[in-house]
Each structure stands twice: as structure tokens, then as C-alpha cells.
Image 1 (cartoon, rainbow, N blue to C red):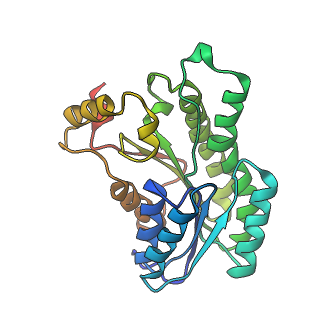
Image 2: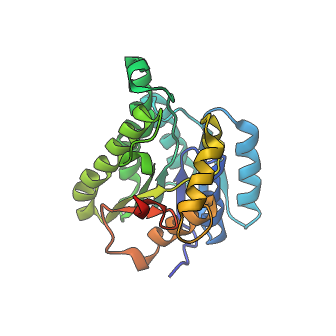
Image 3: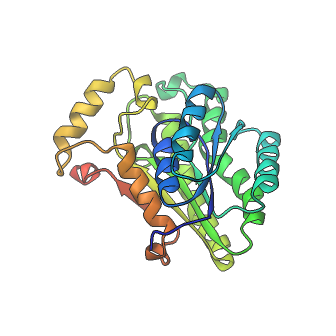
Length: 250
């Protein structure tokens, strides 16, 4: 059920954190991986080494997913190297952490472009490489449905992302493409280090998580692998929450 030998996957923002964990987990199941990054070249190269240690190929591509020209060029490289795409994970994310009334239009548009609109662009260029069907996943966060301090722009963009997933699921289902969202709880990644109250967030999450530990990138990667398997064939347009039960505590 988890034998994905020879399939090709694209993970945006795949050089670190959750993206890297997903990339390596796919490689362990025989998937050739395209790692997209925009700033951290060394991290991307180290990720590629970890991927290739599992006997699969890795293509590293620098591209800003908010730039349509960059995305088009990226898919031209993927088409030239592999000729197809089977799995796609929209994981790249960014945004400004500020109170709502301190946000400018630039802050808002930046978060929306990278966190939400990018998935639409990825689908537009990626779906033609999936003539036999495939899997598309977006990585979201609990801020899409919960109010988190200074998370206004990012949270709103993640909510838009989850809505876009549902609409794509309806349109792409007839093509044999499953589209779903993975919503991660409090995961201690580089992104969380940008929060001034990082330690408070982690401590609160740990205390309120019924399973008694924080969510890790590997936990998220396990769910991504499941969503690529035949075991998830009838899961479509859903948001799968991976947080050890934290979000059910209110």
C-alpha cells in the first residue's frame, strides 16, 4: 500500500522543517523528489543528499512560488527531467507577524500570494503533468480556524488555502487527482522561531495535547505518505489535522 516506487514528487519549501521531513519520507518509499527552495541553498543541498541516500533521484530547483514565471520555469525543468509528476505538496509559506491594525496591503498580499495563491499556480502548471491522476496536498496550520496573536495575515491566507483545496478537489476529482490539506499543530520548526512567544506557544501546546507530546515534522510526513497511498483513495477535499488532539481542547 505504501510502495510508491518510481513516482515523482514536488515539495515546495522542501529544504527544511516539515517540507524536508516529507521529502525524505517519500524518498524512503522509492519516490524521486523535486525539492523547491528560494533562499537556503545549503539546506536544499543537504536535503538532496538525504533523499539520494535512499537510492532515488533528487532535483533541486530555486523558485519563488509567488512568481508565476518562476513556477512555469520550475515545471519546465520537472518536465524535462522526469516527464511527469505524480505527487505535489504545497508547503512553502511566509508572512508578517503583526497585529491586524499594523498590517499594510503589502503584508496582506505577500501572505496571500505565497500561502494561498501559489497553490493555484502550482495546480495550473502541475496538473498537465498528471494525465493519469495524482495527489496534491497543501500544508496548513491551526491558525486557519483559530485566532492566534499576530497571526492575522498568515491565518487568513491559510484559511483561503484550505478553501482553495476544497474547490480544486471538486474540479480535479474527475481527473483522478486527490486534493487534501494537512493542518499541523504546534511544530517546533524554523518558522515558529519567528514568534516572539515561541516558548509560551510550545509549552501551552504540550500541556494541552492529550497525547502528551508536541507534533513533529515526521508526524506530518507520515500523514502525507498515507495521503499518497491507496489507503486514502476516497479522501478528497478534506483537512486532516495532525496535532495529537491539541485543537479539540478549545
